[in-house]
Amino acid sequence: MRTIVSLLAYTSVLNAFGQESLSLILAAENQLLEGDTIKAIATYKSVLEDFPESYSATKRLSEVYYYQQDYHNAILYSNITIEIAQAHFYDENKPDNKMQYKTDLADAHHLKGLIRLQQRRFRDALKELEVATRFDPLNKAVILDRAMVFFTANKLDSARFYLHSVKSKPEMRSKALFSLGNSYYKEKNLDSALFYYEQVTHSYPLFKTAYRYKGMVLTTLQSYRGAVEAFSTYLKLDSLSEEVLFRRAVLYNELGEMSNALQDWTRVIQLNDQNEEAYRNRGLTYFQAGSFNKAIEDFDQALELQPEQAYTEINRGYSYYLLNNPKQALTDLNHGIEKMPRYYFGYYFRSLVHLRLKNKKQACKDAKRAAELGMQESAMDDLVLKKCF
Figure 1 (cartoon, rainbow, N blue to C red):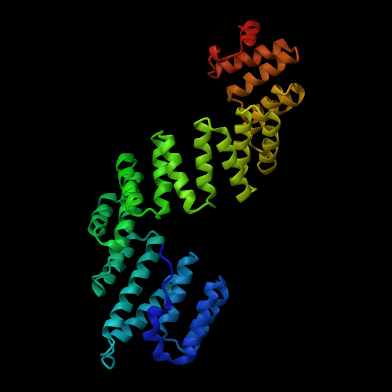
Figure 2: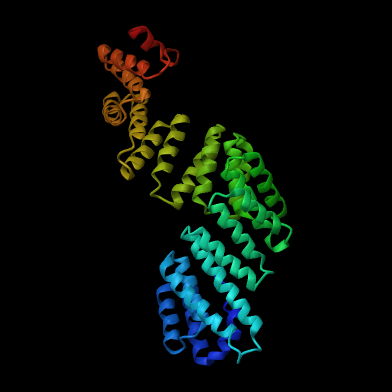
């Protein structure tokens, strides 16, 4: 969604209401910049108490509600904005500012179209954008948003038609190319999606989101090194992205680069210490690196945040087994298997624990249950095979 536009766009209208209205709207603008939307909304409404025909205040209220996803109020003030703009545009006593009022009408219908899009009222959205185009036919942003309506409605060929029509315009090209990539990504045409994402990153090296999507496509294509490079470039532009760090950590793990994976998992946890998946995955990385005590510490954290993670209990149980603590291992494995009774690794790990505890009968029962659930005998420890098969 686009950023709320500068107040300067409305100064010609504001002047008609005098200094008092202008001062109030400027105060509301400052409140928005400070992040106090509640106070800003109240200030805009106070403008309308004395100046009910303030296009600027009503449009701003519609925009604020739009960004708050309060679409009922956004539409309410959008309709008022259109009525005000129409009154000015069709007022025969105001012939001098016809072009300004025409632009105001186009902007108001454009905004209403975006609100309808978020409500998934696609026909209504297209209708509003068509009206916006009639009042301002040179505004290519409206065409781009028309493509987004078709994209959201999953009419991808129509979306691409409009995207191709604006991609030659310098101010629209990066968004059009990126959206073309998204349209192919949505239908899982990964080669075409990658083609457009690479066009974006080549021509617009600061377009960070294109690197994220490029990395996602390359991950799906199992081009892990290329995906790491794409995510790394993204992180140079935005080092605080928990999601991209998480994705890169998974890739480093897949590539066997445990040290790099651990650094990324740790960074994710620093950004969000409530991310149980990051604790669980860092625990698995420690496990693969042979650091079983550290793995258990992370599994503990993950289970504190999400006690129902059966996989994590089973992995912690196996870690205890490898640290020669079979009783604690058995407790975890029993709990894990109770929650996931068809997970063959749980039974296999428990068979190893029972063998260590010299419970051969129970060990063989678990080993055979693991085989019944799909575990290949060739993947089992020789001791299990010798004792039970």
